Length: 89
Image 1: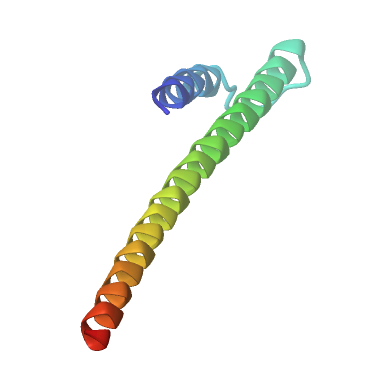
Image 2: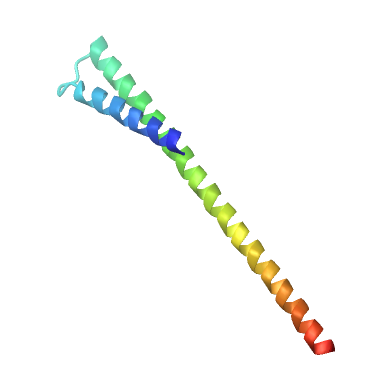
């Protein structure tokens, strides 16, 4: 998770560098083309890493929820066993 944060920070820095080089008036030149391609690639890089980071967060939340439900079910089963034992005696 920390590694994805570092990737996002580096990608954002590279995106900002490309944005700073973006010409105010687009001219048909190699430098303008390079900046547009650079911004596109860095934007895709940021989106992919952010998407992966969010997916990891969702997976972690689902695991916590599954563990919480498992614990609740075990506690419920123990309670029902105790109830049956006390009713029969």
